[in-house]
Each structure stands twice: as structure tokens, then as C-alpha cells.
Image (cartoon, rainbow, N blue to C red; front, side, top):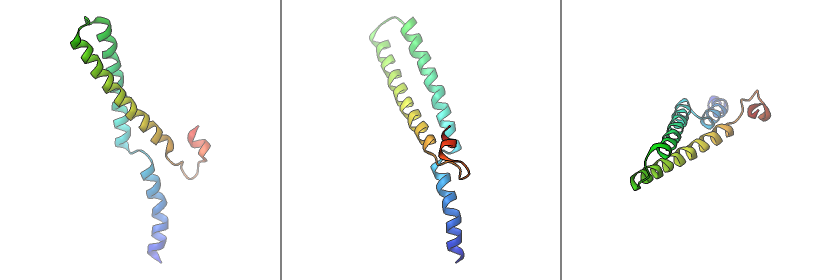
Length: 97
């Protein structure tokens, strides 16, 4: 009987913990946002101050690719953090708003 009670008690807690982003994921999301801002800055400045040439065009394309990848990662994190189940004392509307 004890294993059944323990399983019913621990299962919801484990499910909730696994559904929410971890502290490491929040840190990675923050670092991704910092990198996104820095890449945007670099793109703006290379377009504004660098002389147009094939090398700079290639560098700009590499920066744009990195930016798109980080933004896709950020969107997935945002979606996952919104999907996290609300605390059992909250309603779904309270958790979203």
C-alpha cells in the first residue's frame, strides 16, 4: 500500500517539475537573448560602416544565419515556458495573465 500512496504523491510533483523549464534553461535563454542583441548590433554596424565586398557580404549572411537560429531557439523556449502547467492553486487564466 505504501508504494501506491508514494507513487500518487510523487507522480504529480515529478510531472510538474519536468514540464517547467529548469534554471539552466532560463540561463541559456537569457544568454541567447544577449547573443541575439549583439548579433543585431554587429549586423547594423557592418551594414553601416563596412565597405561592401564579398567577404563582408558572407560575414553578414553568417550573422543572419546565427541570428535566425538563436531566434528559433528563443521562440521554442518561450512556447515551452508558456505551456508549463499552472501551480495547482492557480487557474489556467491566472498562470497566463
